[in-house]
Amino acid sequence: MSDVIVRPVEAEDFPQWLPLWTGYNAFYGRSGATALPDAVTQTTWARFQDPAMPIHAIVAVSRGTVVGLAHYLFHYSTSSTAQTCYLQDLFTAEAARGQGVARALIERVYAAAAQVGTTRVYWHTHETNRTAQALYDKVALRSGFIVYRKPS
Image 1 (spheres, rainbow, N blue to C red):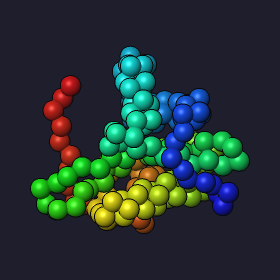
Image 2: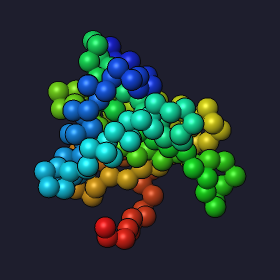
Image 3: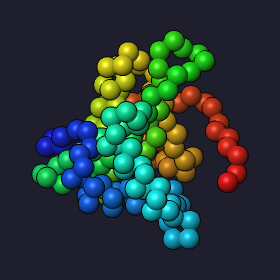
């Protein structure tokens, strides 16, 4: 998709961002009875609009339509003096998949990380998400780490 523009999310993007956010959450099993509460979505969106918050949102736009999103944040680590960038969410519209949108979003996150003086960017994906892994294996190195978390 050569006509894709990746830029920071704007307040007026909400109506187009929301279906992608909903699709992302459904992909990871957060829909129906397990859907995120609306308050979480509204708070997340408000954080993107607050320059004091360390969480950022970018969108990929093609011909006036938002076709992808990425959310990332910076944090400090015990293994570096520089900040680390965590790419928390990445999703593209089904019709835009395989056309370079996700790669463009990842590259923009890499650029944002470089602007704050770090090259360390990481993310997680589900072990069954083979389609995404095909791209990730081209743009990053697998860490080999397994993620654990306390059950809700």
